[in-house]
Amino acid sequence: MSRKPQDLIEIPSGALASEFSRLEDLEPDHIAQAYEHCRLVTRQGSKTFYFGARFLPLEKRRAMWAVYNFCRLTDDLVDKAGDLALPQIQARLSEWEAELLESFEGRVRASRPSMVAWLDTVRAYNLDAQAPLDLIKGVRMDLEKSRYANFEELHLYCYRVASTVGLMASQVMGYSDPRALEYAVNLGVAMQLTNILRDVGEDAQAGRIYLPQDEMARFGYTEDALLRGEVSPQFVRLMRFQINRARRYYNQALPGIEYLPEDCRLSISVAARLYSRILTKIERNNYDVFTRRAFVPKSEKLLGLTRAWLGRKLGWHELPSGPLGSYEEADA
Image (cartoon, rainbow, N blue to C red; front, side, top):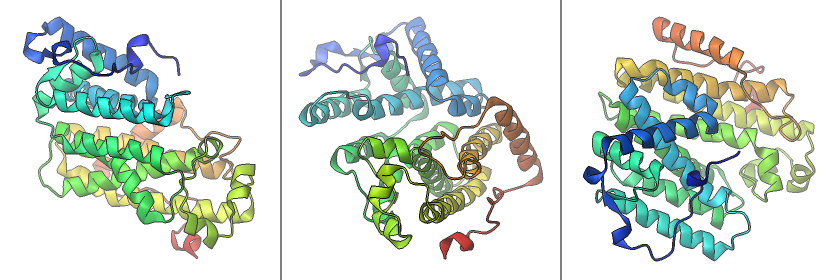
């Protein structure tokens, strides 16, 4: 996607403490402009995230734009690295981690609007450092691993790159019971599994295969077939199994919405239900994730909003199953 220059991370080596400012030394207009920058990047970068966030109270909506921007910039250090050598990418990640830790000491580069808004959000909602640090660990995994032997390994990756976002969101929104965090972890795993299934073909071309190796073997689908983009009966069975597992994680996450403040519940319900629709799109595309991209058009997002609102009113805590009608059929 096209980016404004300030969205691209150009972290100078050997950053000096003098390059940082205290948040309290920045003008209110400077902070407000930083949030507006985050809003624009979020709108451009993730239409589903942006749509769901519209149903949050304004202050929490702004905070979620800041969280999205931090996560997006962290991810882009690897995904948008271009021709940089591995040691250079690793060095940039280390510098980025150092800049993150500076933010928890109340210092920020005034020239980086995403981090100005991030620090203001950290202050306002008392975010802790563990989740964003774990996110950086997850991004590092993409430098260290291109295959996952089993789901246990993949689950750790999903936790680090996605559940951490849910944990940060939970801190922004507030929750009435610590059990809410378990549900947030499940929702993050569900959404990351959805990303992985949508992008199977694209990731394979980039040299990354996230589908667990033991499960590919179990369904008789080879890596060579994946790299050739074969939508064989074996692949369809493998994808049904993966989709049904992702749906289980969504269904294990939805009850946790009740632990969130009333004015935040619709937003998360909308986001979960819209993102899960990508799985249905994959099914309707006959599991072709190599030449057809699964996405949710605007008209269906509005329908999803209606369903989420009805779900809130009627107490629905499960997503509808896919064409199989049951999870177990694909697990056989």
